[in-house]
Image (cartoon, rainbow, N blue to C red; front, side, top):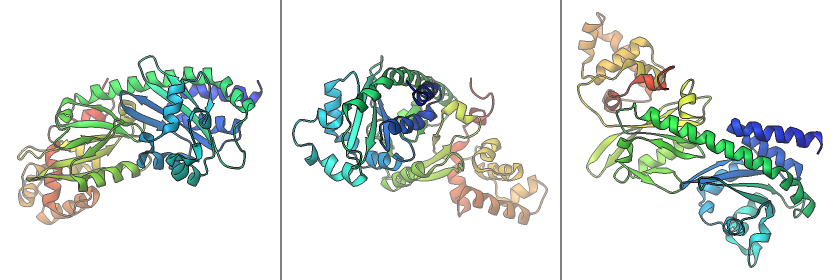
Length: 370
């Protein structure tokens, strides 16, 4: 074992405690056998999650979005073989490997000509599959390279088991946090699907939300669902933005889905790359907590109070009287509120924010959940 192997093993065990390091593990493992990338898939209770380095992340996104995860005889063959180490995908296929649709229509166009993968089962029925891919030039994996990968497998298995326990703890924490929310809410994470829901959200699965397999989620309103999927794909933790999506049914508008990216202390509660989905159904006459509005839309204290008054049904004149200021001043503040929240009309703003009046801002504040 050389120094590079020792460094890789150290990173593997660190990734067990810090799951965000798995892409780095995959990248370095691939480099050890002349591969250009790979992935780590896990399937637990029907929920699919994956990690990949930057070099293969777009390929993995296309793999999932194209539905290849549900039509992959290579994976089926690997699971049936139940290997104790790494295997080449050609060795688990019966028949003409090159004529498989996934090989012909997906792998080859993405310059994947060789894959070595291993299955790592969990104690609670979960399954992890780690694979490394390479292009046409290096050629098939040799037995020496497979043995080199097998040398890392015990360390990978232990670290993946540790990550699984970490994920379960995050899901438990997120689920506990959602019980504090008085409206339908869920936590979703990019690449991991739905992490946790509350009972109010579960009651809407069917009429409003659809389960799409592997723990992922869709809206029954197709236009709204297109916006939801686009939002989840583009959401970036370093530049978090709240997206409010009107949802309609056969009888018209039924609510607004707020997609709220976790940041700051919320990352400790909801987990990395998480979004809080809040389905708001308007309730007239009850004001929204201004602290929520400040956090959601980066409003100033004054703007948050004005927005809260609007959701309570007050007019601009009434707000101006309460605040002992002019109507023009309130109108200027309203324009700033509309700009920051992304709405074009006051009525849309009030309708969208009206369902947030039962939420407690303590959910995403320091000390708000334990």
